[in-house]
Structure formats: C-alpha cells, structure tokens
Amino acid sequence: MKWSELPEPVLLQRSFLFGITGIVLGTLSIFNSTWHLVQAPMGPLNGVSFLLQLAALGTAILVLRKRKVEKEHKEKAQMLILIQTVALLFFLFSL
Image (tube, rainbow, N blue to C red):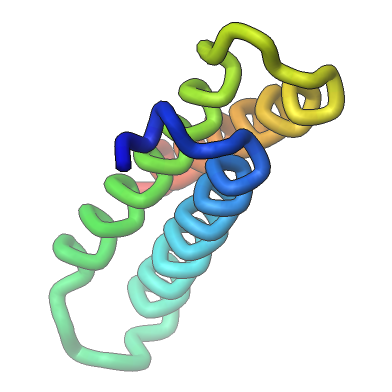
C-alpha cells in the first residue's frame, strides 16, 4: 500500500514518531559531544537524526497535499511541520 493512500491519522502518527525519534537522537548526539559520555563518532547518529526529521516533515506535508483533509488533521499537520522545521534548524545550527 502506498503512503499516499493511508488515512491521515496514521500518517500523522508516523510523522510524530519519526520526528520525536529524530529529536531524541539529535539530543543524544549534542549531549555526547558536550559531556563525552561515549567515545564514538557522532556523525552517523546526526545523519540518522536528520533523516528521521526529514521523513517526519515529508509525511506531514503528505497529509497537507491530500485533497479532502479534515480541519483537525490539517491543523495537526501544520503544527507538526512548524515544530519539525524549528527542530531541524536547531540541530543544523548546533553542529
């Protein structure tokens, strides 16, 4: 089944899960860079974090691009896009 054929609540839930996972991984990377908890390269972790955040943005935009979207789902998608954009910019500028 294509992602564009899934119902809006499922897409919004996946967008939230991708986004929160990306934010948590990015936060772990920043904490490790600051306090040196684990001696490991943080580049791959940052990459996965950015990839998950971009996937979250994409799925939220996919909800907005659908034809007949309920107002409630449209507002949730707009809020997710705003939060994910701010989080992505924060992690980009923190490098």
